[in-house]
Structure formats: structure tokens, C-alpha cells
Image (cartoon, rainbow, N blue to C red; front, side, top):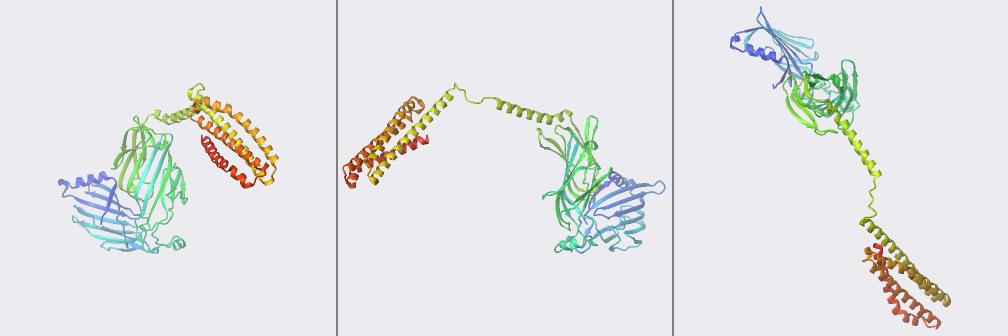
Length: 547
């Protein structure tokens, strides 16, 4: 069976023992006593070995190791009601290239419910513990395979990927943000999930799902949050005292075997508890692994974000890690903040040891961001003062300003001309209306009176047009507009004359008591000319209106 091991305690001592015992000078040595203890109360198998060589001047070697992926679900798929059973494969005898005079094995189980186990000589069960041995005078490479099949209620929570971002601020805070991709590596759920059954039986015997995870945070953790892609998750409880802060979190749904969830927890820590000074450098002393209890992490990435301006960065870790450096840009950053990236695979809670990140940082750099803010607001206020007090208008003596004034006068003159022409056209309409009234009532005197008043009005309007036309001719900027205006006035004058002539012809016809057909024949040619002239006047007015 494949085992991914991580030696977490006294690793150097173990390597020393193997080196000493495998040298030719010790090839005939005998191990007088070997005691092994395997703790499988969680998903991590912790093995403690005590090796003793010699009798009088005995030398003892203590080896502690943690193994992942040792406990295999059996069966691999279960229903929601089934209990969770796992299987452990081991050897009752210590596999060694040396003769062992006495050897014993103890396996600590989560509870006393044991489905089966391999029965050998000198094997017995005491509660939740299985003991093998002692076995005397074992030959080299002795091996006695055993299988233990038992119930485990432990949460087989595995973080396929965990990213811990530790951001250091010299303004008094260390912000920690942890992004979890979590999966349940226990027996997979067979069949459909019943929420009704799950809620009806909240704590049944042998349920394989787990609902809670416990994180032990540093004692003065604050501003704690727990959220996922949807938003904040309120199903969490926190307890704190002077020694620790415990955060009990509950995912949005219970996790059965093979199910996954993604979430983020974050919290702040007081800078004074984790940042220290030594030999002209500052160093951050903080834990490496996840604060989750009994969590196995397949890939752990720790990103330590230092303040902008940090230099001469070095890292001290109690075990081997992959190290790299990056740059992160945040608000008010210029050169960016240096980031130390530490990566390690197959991480267990035993790896949650202190690491030290050393760097140099000048206190002058603390003033950079406040000075940037002060400078920014100062420039903003000065700009506002200049904008409100300065005169950005064009100089009154400049050619552009004079040209603008002249053009404004041209437009005003055009507007006056347009208004007078409109009054003339209104007088024309009044004259036309008098002819219609004459055909209806036959009142010749009233029609003549209207003709007289209209003629007087048109003469007055014509007098008003003369100075306006002279003004337009005096403006250089109106050189292309003035001919059109003169043409408009001329066409209106011609239209006025044609209307007067037609009016005279119609009135004389009524005075002579001519027939209506005879009058229409006499004014037919005049009528066509009047329509054409009126269209030309309207076109010229539209042209001027567009200007």
C-alpha cells in the first residue's frame, strides 16, 4: 500500500540512527528492545518507535513519524445510514536488518468497535487498543502482516490546495487570509442524499459526514470572518481566552465522502506579538501550517507579504520547503510589496511550527504613504483654488474675441431681418384674407381700407430693413451671407408688388361688376408668379434660419 510519510519529530535523530546502525562496524549489532505505538484515532497515523541497543550502556533512539493515506475506506462506497469503516495494513513484527531480541506493537483505535483484526500469537484487545507481542529473538527482516478493520468517526478532511496569505503592516497589524479547497477523502456516498433524514437524525451512530471544523487561532486574533463565493457564512462560533482563540466553522452543507467545498477565513493579529528585531533586522515569527485540527494539506502555499521597501529578505524554516519571490501591488504602492512564497506538499498538523522571515526596513518608508496622501490632497486643493480664482476667458483685445463679437452682431442682425420679413409675410396674408372677405361679402370699401393700412405697414417695415442691410454689408464676416439677405429682401419686395397688383385687379373687377370667371382669368398669370415668389422667399428664410 502506498504511504506518503512525513517525519515531523527528531528527523535528524532518525537519520543518525540509520547511519550508525548500517555501518560495517555495527552490522552484527542486536537491537535489544523495540517498542512501537501506532495512533489511528484520526485520519493521520502517528507512529512512535523506541529503539534500544545494548544492555549495560544502552542507547535509545526515539522516532516519531506521521503517515497520510494509510487508512483506506473499506468498503469504498457506503450509504447515508452506514457506519464509516477503514482498514489499516501493517506488520506485527518490526522490519529490520538486525536481530531484535524483544519487540512489541500497540495500535490505538478511535473506539472499541472493531470489525476484525489479524489474530497472532500474543495478540489481544484491550478496549480500543490492540496489542501484539512481545515477540522474542526475531530474525533479520522478520515480517508478519496484519490487517485491522475498524470504525472511524474522524473527519477525513483534506485540503487539496491551501493558500495562506500573511500580510505584514507596520501600522500595527498582521492580516492572515486562508483560501481552502477542501474534500472529504472518506468512503464515498452511495445513492442520493436525503436532507430530511439527515436533519431528522442529527447525531446518528456511524454517520460518515462531518459538519464542523475546528481552527485554533492565536490568542489575540481579531476581525475574524468566514465566507465563500456566495458571501459571508454565519454558521460559526468563536471562543477566546488568554491562551488561544478557537473558531468552530460549519460549511453550508454536510460533507460526505468525495464531496468538496471552498471557503475563506481571515483574521487580524497584533503586530507586536509576531514581529521582533534582531541584529539590525526585523523578523516575523509565525506558524507555517493551517490552524485546522487534524487537517491534511496536499499542497500548501504560504505567501508572506512584506511592507514596500523591505530588503535583504531571508527565511528560516524547520524543514525543507520550496521558496520563491514575487511582487504584489496594492493601494498607494510605487515599487510594489515583496512577497516570499513558500510551498510544501503533504502537510500535516505537525508541520504547524514557527518560521522566521528576516528583512530590513527603514522607518522612513512608513511616511511614504501619508506623504503621498497629503501631497495628493494639497495638489487637489491648489488646483481647485486656481480654477475658481483664475480667469480663463479669451482676452477682449484678441482677434478671436473681436471676431466672436462681430459674429454675434451678425447673428443678431440676421434675426432682426428675419423677424421683419415674417411681419411682411403676415401683412401679405392679411391682404389675401381681405380678398377672400370681398368675394364672400362684396364689401369693397373694407377691402380698400385693408389695402391702405397694409401698404402703410409694409412701407414702415421697408424703412426698418435699410439700416440692417447696411450693417450686414459692413461686417467682413457676413460677406457670404449679405447677398442672400439682399436677395431675400428683393424677392419679398417683388412679391409685395405682385400681391398689390392682383389686389387692385380684383377690386376693379368688383367695382365694374365683372363675373368671377372673368376676374380669375385676369389674375391667373399673376397668381402663378406669386406662388413661385412665395416659395423662393420661404427657401431663403430657411437658409438664413440654418445660419
